[in-house]
Structures are given as C-alpha cells and as structure tokens.
Image (cartoon, rainbow, N blue to C red; front, top):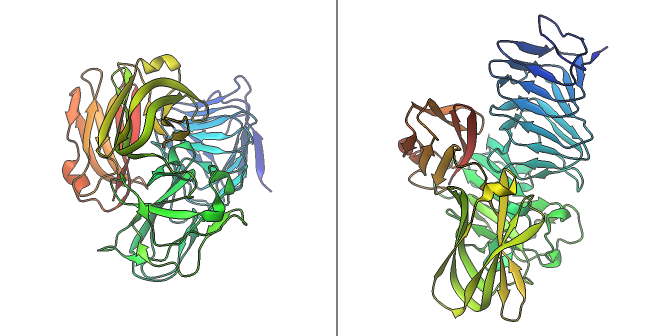
Length: 484
C-alpha cells in the first residue's frame, strides 16, 4: 500500500517528511534535500519552491496544487513510477532558473499549466485536462525514453516541444509529435522540434499557415530523403481549408518557403488531421515543414520579419520582395498572444517589384507589465482586405536587465554571434548544453560585456536543439539555439 502524506506546510526538514502545519506552501532552502521515496505520495495544495543549494528528489508521487519553482536541484528520478501531477484549479507554473528533470508528468488542470523553466521528461507525459503553455526560450524536452504524448483539443501542448535525438538510421519511424516516415535512406539520429500556437503561424509563399510547424534535424551526412507524413489536431487549422491541405518546406535561415514533395490533399475528415497521401515523393528530411491552403494569398511577399528588444524599446524590422496594392501595415501588439491591439501604422509602397525594408519601434515596452510581448503585422490592401503575418515575441525586461542575444538563430555553417551584457561588472557564468543537459562549453567572467562567445564550439555542432544558460547575480536566462 502506498503511504499518503497531505503536506500543508514544511517548516524544517530533517531525515524524514515533517507534517507540521504553519504555512500554506513548501520552501526548501540551503543544503537540504526533500526526498519522496518509492511508493510514497505527497500532496501539496500550494507552491513548492526549491531554493539555491537545496534539492528535491521525487522517487514516489508528488501531487502539486500550485507552482513548482526550482532555483536549486530537481534530481532526475530513477524509479520508473516516479510521478509529478499538476492537479490545481488555478493556472500553475513550472518555473525557476534551473532544470526540472522529471520521470513521469501528468497534467490535470483545466485552468492550464505554464512551463517557463527548462523541463525534461524521461517517461510518460499524460495530458488529462488543460493546455500546457511552453515559453519559447525553454522548450519541453522529451528524452529518448519518453513515448509519444497523446493530445486532445482540451489537453495539449502549446509552444515548442523537442524530441531529443533518437537513432533511426534506415528504419521506419513511428509517429512522434505528428511526424512519421517509412523505412528508407539512413537519417542517423533524428531530432524533432514541434511548435504550436500563435508563434507557429507563418507565411508560406504568400499563404498563411496552420498554427503548427515541425523542424527536423538529422546527423547523417548529405541530405537523406524520405517520404514524410504529418498529423495535427484540428484546433491548429488556423481557419485554413483542410479539404485542400498544401504542404510547404523551408531550410535555414527559413526566410523563404517552397512547395514540398507531397500533393494538396483533403484531410478534413479526421481529427487529428492525417497527411499521408499515396504517391508522395521523397524529400530531404532536414528542414522546417508546415501546411496552408490555396485560399489565403497575401498580396505582399514578406521575406523577413524580426522583433527584438533594443534598450527600453522593441524594434521590428521586415522586408518585402514585392507588393501589390499594399496600402499600409498595422503593427499589432499582444500581452497574451491571443488579443492584439494596434501599436502603430507604417505606409506601404502600393505596387513594387523590388525589395523594400521597413522598421517600427514600440517605445518603453516595460509599461505593459508582462514578461513577453507578441507582435504581428496586419497588412491591408487598398480595398481594405486584411492579412496577418507570423507572430514574433520580445522578452520585456528593465533597462538594467541581463541582455543575451544570439544571431542568426537558427544558424548553419558558422555558429551564431553570441553576446551577453550585464548591468554592471560582476560574476557571470554561461553554459552551452545540448537538449538533454550535457555540457558542451563553459564561460566565466566578471566583465560587463562578453562578445563572440562559443564561436568555435557552435560552428561544429550538428543539427539539433541546444541551450545557452546564462547566470549572473540575481538573475538567469535560458536561450534556445537551433542548428541546421
């Protein structure tokens, strides 16, 4: 029989679990370990905070009613049944400056769970109820031992999810995150990054895409080609006509898109959608993939659109290759990625067959009181027909915040140019790891500005997902690096 503890508070920790009741949340600080043994069940109705120097080891079951904040160590469980369950009734967060390593994770909270810390799952991810919103800079990583998670319309992952590298070689690849392929040319080890939600909507050759794209990376030499099949929930259709699902692909730096090998197909009869038409040809596996329909053409060919923080402000830059009857661009801003408002308006060129560059600065973005702002372009024709671009995000921090940039990202060939700027001189640590947390490079300094970090290391990295972990006094950041 399992031992069940209802832990209302944690006042101090010795060798076993205490059961005193003074505070509503659990906070572990200093050189202390909170240990839940195999077969043990602990229920915490409020938040659990693991402070610097402290450790949480869960080899049993932890039922969490609020947030898990890790600024110390959450050790990777070894017990096959080790389980974290998010079972609150208000929105919950997995957050903090350090990695949250889990064996099994169950999400059962209709109000949703937000992941803002680097989180890995080695076992089963069970999605019972609620959306899991994953921050752009901290993708949820499913390790090679994790099975494919089952998603539904009301219980699914929103944001970037990474399937850590798995050896496939010439074998068939069973569906994972909506990607599958029959046996064929050797791909070596395969990595999949799937992004869903507002930031996944792109413009593919003038057509607005689904709210999902897949990015595939391989370790095989050359450009191995396979027949690719994809699946996605109807909730990600983004209003597109799935009776005419049209596949598109792009390669780094993902500025342009072309039709991929598959034909336009009717996938509207099933949910999840299943794109696996007969007669589809092979195509290079490495690249980024999405779908659109023929019914949403844009009169403006947008070849680049970036958004970044510039001091106190957000700077948006975009380039058009051609324009037809383009009246103007409305720059739209959102605090939650769902509801957008107009931030400004830039006049278009009307008709143009040459490249045009545009820029807009949104001043003093900290005034909006959110950690992330979402931006998109709303392009209007001279007859007032409107079309929207992909969504870009900007991290909002004060003028004295830690600034970390990596450009270009994704990168191919030479690595990205990495720059770190502290508010003042002080101890700084920068770690380069792969998606599983394996250390690839380390940099330490007291200088305020560090430029050109890990140039040699990143230039030789194979395609895949890597993480840049930057820590200084009082703050830290995790930046996802993509290699093609």
